[in-house]
Length: 321
Image (cartoon, rainbow, N blue to C red; front, side, top):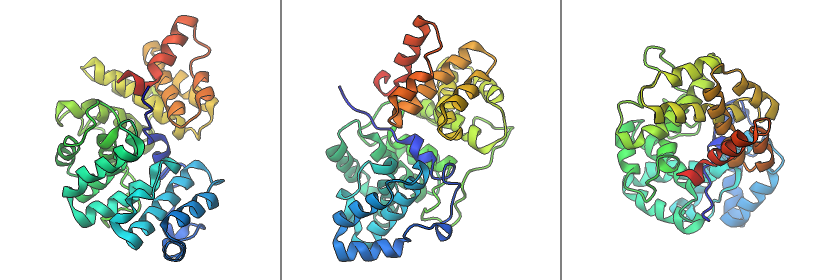
């Protein structure tokens, strides 16, 4: 059985669990200190020290700190540091490393980075390629269609996760440590165009786009879960409506501070039973992806046996691709 690592839940912590903390306000070692440590101890040893030092931080702060280390790593040793990062803290080290690598070497390096991800994490380690997607979107200044075309040259061809998910997340929530100075923490919501750009991009990427779109609504607007679910149901294509509702449930996990009862309450707020069920399915995946299988089961346990079994089966999104 393949093991899949998506990493979206922890990445979202960059802007929302950590409170979108700018570098200058953080109390952990700034990048220059990590650069000195890398130069003195070597990249591998410095990274282990970094992970030990940040092991007890809240999830979102860990991810932000890992971005900082990835920045320091790339600036200190360059592309040779690509084998140092790992999946710790939601692949945060890789995400920032790839931003720098693609900014310096251009898009010709993407296939090599894809191969590096596969060699280190296997074909299912898509949190790594997710980071490549961030770097591509940043390099192309958020030209979505062009960025997705580059993602399409990589090995992953499933409708969710991988490079495409990184492109959509970078579009919706530009990385705070990105290479372009014009970046903001989140793009503005236009109620007249709630689905943009998902319905105008190539069809093969629309499922991933709508999965990410629901998260963006959840974290960039004040709309309720019932209102967001209503937007999902406005989509004419059932597959897009369903994945939108699932994405809303996945988003609810981090948006509600990783508190299980708050997440359940968010899904239960939705007045349509079918939409509420899909929200639970997405919440199950959110917990499972973050490594909390026992908590994931709580999202389905009060359902009758048939629906509980279905909820848990459909909630393992990676295995259903």
